[in-house]
Amino acid sequence: MALLRLAVCVGGVYTMFLVWAIAQERLSVPFANRDGTKSEKFRSALIMSICQSAFSIISSFIYILLRREPGESLRSALGLDPARASSKSVAPYKPDANGISPKSQMNGNGHANGSAHSHPSFESVAIRKALLVRYLQCALFITSAAPFGFAALAHISYPAMVLGKSCKLVPVMLMNVLLYRRRFARHKYLVVALVTAGITMFMGFGDQTSGKGHSSGSDETKGSSIIGITYLLINLAIDGAINSTQDEIFDRYNVTGQQMMFWINVMSTFVTTIIALLPLPYIPVLHPSASWSSELSNVLQFMREHPGVLSPLLQFAFTGSLGQLFIFETLQHFGSLTLVTITLTRKMFTMILSVVIYNHKLTSGQWAGAAVVFAGISVEAWIKRRGALMLTEILSFERANNSSS
Image (cartoon, rainbow, N blue to C red):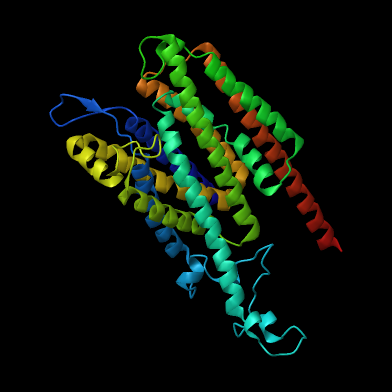
């Protein structure tokens, strides 16, 4: 049964995210209009985010309902029951059989009184509010990151984008140190060095005469590549803030990945929909449409003139939402080591598939740079595997000693 579940998870991650990657790259190239006289690019990362987050709400909600325990309330299943939350900064709320918090059974002098300050609802509301604020923080980060990632594709190739996204460990470590003062093992700095060297090789050994979107002029191509790399670095920095905040949520609160997925996508959809409805001026990357126009109205007009964009947009949203479910299922049942292995090999196949389908040309130096990046990530996976095996041996030894005594 476990082997079958693993096979389903691996197949799901590979299938969903390979199709998702193809759809994302297709959205970054021009679409012909109805009469075929001209082609234009789809530039709205905001609408892409709305579509994917809306699909993710539906898929995660269905998953939570299917996995809900018998008799469990919907609020508890969605992670809003304070009895299911524990925090390092907010005292855990654990009710007794009557649903009354032990703290509420006595006042500050130890007498059974139940003052307003120690009422269980006061504590539960505080925990729930703090948790929802963290979810909103992640949603705002995600809303900010997506446009920079999509804008980078106009200036660098998709293989370069995939390789850059494989370097997420660097900004995640940096943001964990800057935002939450965490420390890391020494081997992680070796991984960061390898990843940084690999991405530098990949960008440095690229064919400067065949930059994306430019057929001539090396100065123009170099300038475009620098812009693309800058957008990618901004995207990675915000991604690091997202992941470090998610780590903080898991550390402080007893929530599942699917619950986090549901609420972050609810808030992301809410925020991005409001932005899409507002008439905003031209803002590079964030709002590339015409001045003082609604993003949603511009995209609907684009879809009417370029109907070919609808299919890859739906593929992007649908496969992205299902792919997240397979990732959280893998993490829940098989741990982070297995997930790292699956996602690492998936990124390799994504890059190779992009090269084959869209006929990208990579130099030998770029392939070497990619190998260095994946070697660095493999070191991280190997260290995690060795640590997991050592922990398993220690636990087995302790169980053997306990049973013998």
